[in-house]
Image 1 (tube, helix red, strand yellow):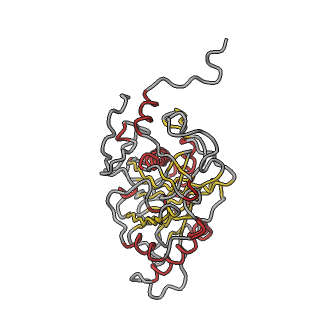
Image 2: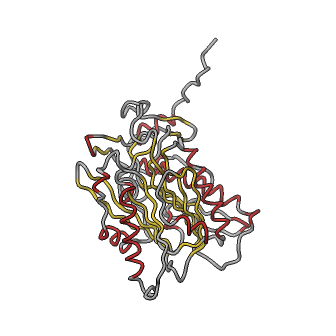
Image 3: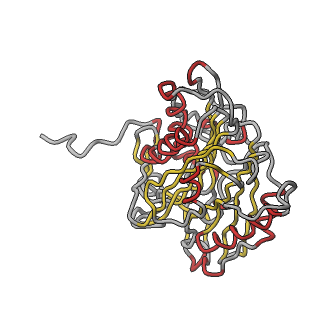
Length: 363
C-alpha cells in the first residue's frame, strides 16, 4: 500500500473515505454496487439523528424490508454473543423464526419508547387494520459516554421519520442515526455497512450487513493492532467503551434460507467482531439479527452455505471499519471526547513494517 497523500472522496459521496477508498480490502469476495445492506433487493435504510450539543448525540436507524408485516413475515434468526442488552422482540423471534416488523436500532434507554412507536407505525400500515398481536424488533447500544442518555431523547416523531424516509440508495455511515453517539475500540464509531455477492450452491446472491458499533477492545486492521496513541490522536487507556458497550448487527440476504440457517448466519456475524479486536466484555451486548427476503424459494443446502458464511464474516469486518472511518471526532456529555480514526495515519500504519512482537529483539 502507498501512503495516502490526500483523503479521497468516499464512494458514498461524503468527504470521509470508506475502507475500500483507502485500498483496505477485506477478503476476496466482491461487494454489491453500493457495498451496503441496501444492495439486497427490497431492503431500505432510514436514519433520524437527534443532536442537542453539547449534551445529546443520539438517534434511531431503521432497516426496512419491503412488505414485511404480521401477515407477511420473513424468515429470520437471532444470535446473542453476549447478552448484556435489551434486544426487544428476541424471544418470539427465536421461537418462531419470523420477523414481523422492520428492525430498529437506537440508544439503550430509548429502546422501549422506540418499540412503542414502531408498533404504532405498523398498526397504521395498509393490511394491519385487524392486527391484534405484533412483535417489534428493536436493538440498542449505550451511547451514554457522549450523550445524556437519561434524557431519553428519541421520540415517536423521530422513529416515524426514520421509517418514512427509508430508501434503497447509498447508506449514510458514521455519526448518524443510532450511531450518532457511539464509540468502539477506542475511537468514535457509529453506523457502518457493507455487502458481498457470494454463490452458495452455484447461485449468486447478495448479503448485506449494517452495524451499530459501540464495543470495547483494541482495533485490528489487516492483522495490525492500532490504538489512539499509535495513530497520534490521543492516549491509550480505559477510554470510551473499554470495559462495556455493545454491537448490534443486522444481516439481510436474498438467498433462500430458513430460520435455522439464518441463525447460523447470525452466529457468524457476531463471530466476525473478533477479527476487529472486540473484547466481548461482561458489559457488552453483542447481537445479530439475520433475515431473508425470498421466503418460499428453493432452499440452499446446508453443505453449500460456506461461501455465504465467509461473505458475512468479511462484510461485518468491513462494516465496522467503515463505521470508524466515517465517524468524526465528537465532544459530548460532560466534556468527554471520542477521537475519529484518521485515514492518513491508518494508511501509513498499514504501509509500514509491523510492530515487533513481545519476544522480538531479545537475545
